[in-house]
Image (tube, rainbow, N blue to C red):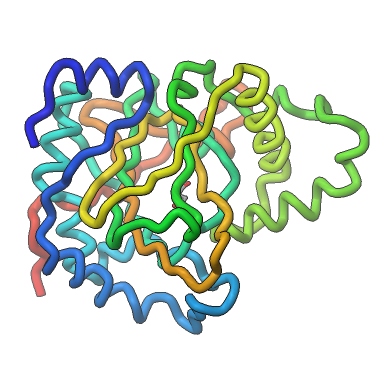
Length: 272
Ligand SMILES: O=C(O)CCC(=O)C(=O)O
């Protein structure tokens, strides 16, 4: 699929773009097959599958690596950003994470700003009841959130339950619950979406389609209406050449928490 200037403008305005990534079915099957053993003790058909993700499977699964550096995707990113993309993390999900709505700018950010994106690839046709990706077109234009000013600006009534919610959400994220303010961010994100009247859209993608999201686009995993359904997908996160990266949730004021990501090699096939 060749993109047009209109696609590029639309991406920067709305914060997302759906692309036919033209990945052959054999490659998508190979991803599914190779990540399966990385979900130990899974129970896709019975309630909540744990874990809901495996991180950086590209290191051991050649097909995950191949999808992370798939030429159609890299070319699309180069076209819409005008710089070479540099993949730095893969996530594979067997089901919806039900992860609260957030923008990646609180997890990964760059200097100069805005040079990060995520690409979510459907490994199967996505059913409306499986908990599709949810995203809020245009929310990428909101000012970026930072965690510190959120301290104590939430209603009193929420305080008792904050710790519990924050713990749950961090466990769902596959992280240790050690960012004390994270749930306050989620509460604030939901409040801002509501206040500015952003409407959700759901990623009912066909197998092999990809949704590119801008770093500041609000998105998450919607609720699984039918827990019997799988929702296999792969997300790859990218920075772009020539930028420095940091982790906002670990940064304090002007003291940014710089990172040196382990970039995913662009050569398509890993040595055996
Ligand atoms: O696919 C999902 O369930 C959520 C993915 C997500 O929000 C993310 O990777 O940042």
